Amino acid sequence: MKTLCLKALLAAVGLTSVAAALANPYVSAGATGVDADAPMQLLKVGDRIGTPPPDPVGTAVPEAEGQTLRDQVLANMKQRFDAAADPSTHLLSLADAKRSGWGYIADHFSAIDRSGSGYVSFDDLKRYLKAKKGAAFANS
Image (tube, rainbow, N blue to C red):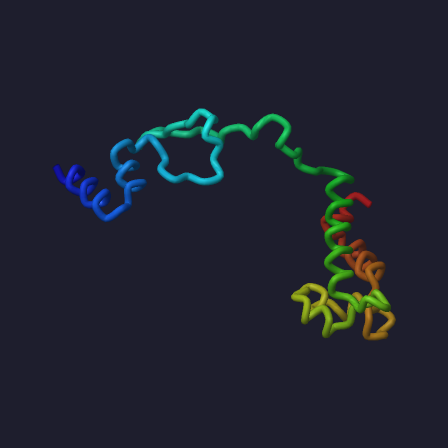
């Protein structure tokens, strides 16, 4: 009885899509971005899902490992370094490191800047990480 009154109230107020959803809880009212022709998979309270459903064929990207992972890590670091460094010199100062949110470089700046010039290059950073046996350099 309460559901019927709520449906009637929502329909009277003009919220017919909500009323339609209450009338049939297995149909999504007003869903956007969903393929209407795709079969709907329903879950009930108490259903257990052991694993997430598989990705559609052709959309899954395998996880990188080994040298591919190292190359990705270095490419990401280089991109972030270039964004933070001076575009004309490609050197990073302590202030640039702090401003760009690279706390690790800021915290270890004096060790990375072995020459004491006040600036580090990406090669300086790689040399420091290799000496520290960073994850990207574990097997190099």
